[in-house]
Amino acid sequence: VQLQASGGGLVQPGGSLRLSCAASGSISSINAMGWYRQAPGKQRELVAVITSGGSTNYVDSVKGRFTISRDNAKNTVFLQMNSLNPEDTAVYYCYSRIATHPLEIPTDYWGQGTLVTVSS
Image 1 (tube, rainbow, N blue to C red):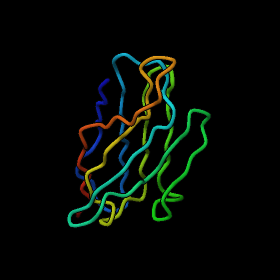
Image 2 (image 1 turned 60 degrees about the vertical axis):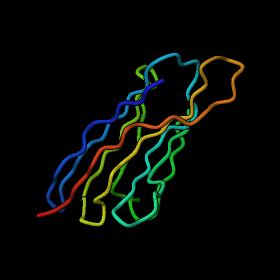
Image 3 (image 1 turned 45 degrees about the vertical axis):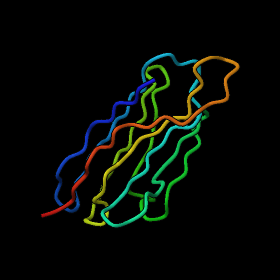
Image 4 (image 1 turned 180 degrees about the vertical axis):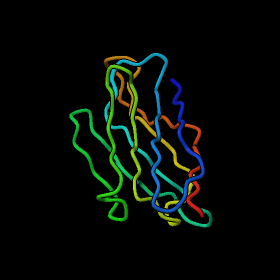
């Protein structure tokens, strides 16, 4: 199983970016999908998560600005980020909780990380 993240880059304060993360390989089912981020000198934090049923949860600092969604047919999770500010600068990592066959306990798989820089 591989997760390929894309969509990071440099954006001005107040701007928007959309991150994508596609899972591929031998996949039987995907439970939760989500995004973490790690800013320089800080611990990794959970930004947003979405369950297989579509329930979502966000860290307080991004509520009302970020939206997580998923396309189950394409095994892809998205993170729409609006009203970005310099405090959002970080490497963003996607993850998916995946079972590779029906009787397997799902395991977390991680993408390679994509850098988001918010600066004028």
